[in-house]
Length: 311
Image 1 (cartoon, rainbow, N blue to C red):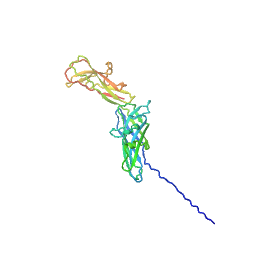
Image 2 (cartoon, rainbow, N blue to C red):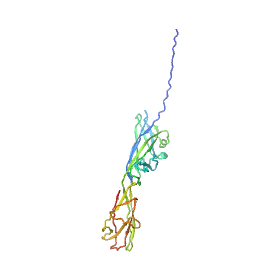
Image 3 (tube, rainbow, N blue to C red):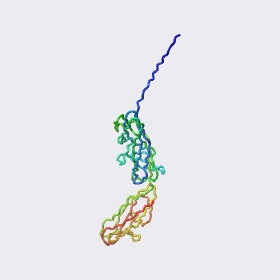
Image 4 (tube, one colour):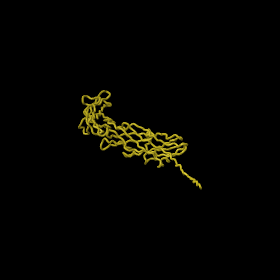
């Protein structure tokens, strides 16, 4: 009897793939608080970045954050939108890398000016977190409709590169690495106040004269700052030296000069004291006339008018 023994030889070929370290970024919310014609306070939020550790050696990362404002469009300035009105008004804001607002956050087209950070990850420490602090502010000198403003689509892109050991890649290496980009979204919000301000009220100076044989005229300007569409009413009081309805300026000796205030440049409509008038413009001219009269004594004559804004 013949016995045959079969020998089976097997070989399993294995390979170990090259391990690539990686980073990822969290989404974020940046609430800019309350805003008005003077803008908003500077606000900030932290964006979390997590990066892999290696099992036996330090990994040094360099990462650079850029932000693209997609909806509404606009990078400098960036914009938020309010859907409670039609057409929907826009509100300008800006994002910064620093609290001093000296470095605006770059977008993809201007990434060469991005501010980058180094993050060293010790061996076998999991996926530690590093924070990127963002700053934002609503820009001043805007008066859109009051209400809630937000962004629809703001895309954060984290360009990064890494090296094993303690020497981190350069900013240029990170920014030119199109293979390793982590992305997420940022939502920016604010509430534009339904409030008004009297920004300025310019003085009216009639100059210097020796006699008042003819009328003197002058003009001042009241500058308001209110959300678009606000119903405005303004009143001027009689001043500090009035006699009945007649406004008067006074000098240090207690002598007076009469004057009148008007709403129109042809002096047809007087500003009655403590009477409320509706206005449609936020720049309100005030026309003034000192009529011809005798001057009892030399010196500086002045008066102060109080403005009341109702809205």
